Image (cartoon, rainbow, N blue to C red; front, side):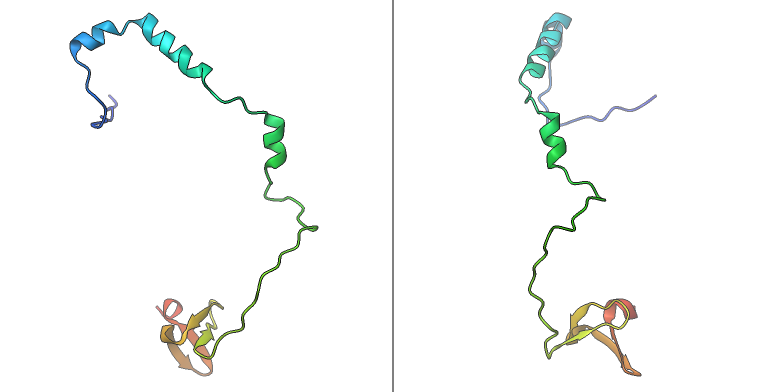
Length: 102
């Protein structure tokens, strides 16, 4: 008793159109669609993928680290650097952002 979704953007077929679509025509169309596909060499694809546990010890990561500016603070709970306008609590030497204080 499943209900099929209706795609209202597709063109509607009339009864005459439905009668014209014979099984042979539909099978011929299906065969034509499959022949236009792209052939992919699976070995090349496998070599280009990186697995989650891949050894990246020979890779070098370089990025520029900027120290916190005078108008920024580091939250003592989430350890993210925020603008001073995001500070919620500054008691007992703890600086907490609004997200962590909520």
